[in-house]
Image 1: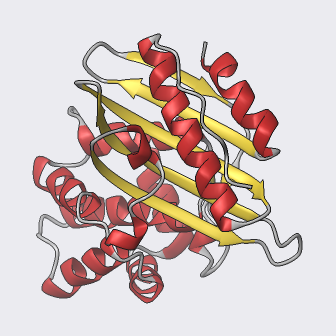
Image 2: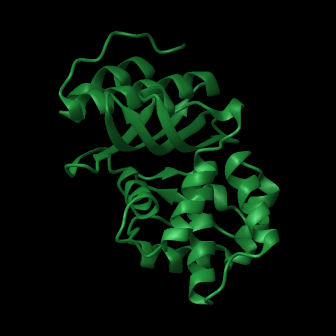
Image 3: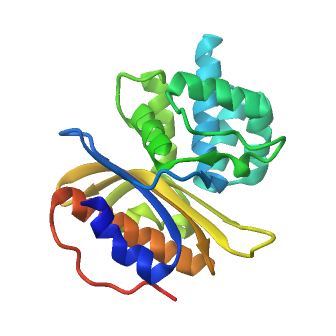
Length: 241
């Protein structure tokens, strides 16, 4: 079902695409693509979840500085804030420890300071979304509420990706141009409200020849995934070249 819906997207874009979608109300779930993708700034949600788990373990709230850095990292995708919080959680080791608790089994933390080179699968990021938006979860209710709030306050210039599939959304995007190939990794994940239903949605891509092409591919894949899970046809729309 999902593979058939995404076939036109894959064929027309020439981009490697992985998608995971869940309708939490009834548990309907579909995953397309098991390959690993680099997260780019998508890792920032994972970093914040790791920070909150650390604070929970220490039986404390986030400090004012941590709260401010988290807001900058998620709302504006600020890399300096992410660098600082990456160090605060203990880098890759801290992320790996948190992911064991969160149930992410196919995510490999980026080397050294390179959190954006963390590798993951669509299924793992769907597991992370479920931990953020639904209970029971290793994240406390207050921790989940903070992440949800920040993902609903993304800067206006970053309102793209899975938001194309719905009218209400909470999301985080990631984008990175690879140095050698000059191709783009474009990712998006979040909770969207579409056609009166709620969906958790992840789209990971790599190999796009431009950022705009990658965004168009992600948005088309997001719309296709929601329609596939609902069993409704998707209106024909082009992918930006």
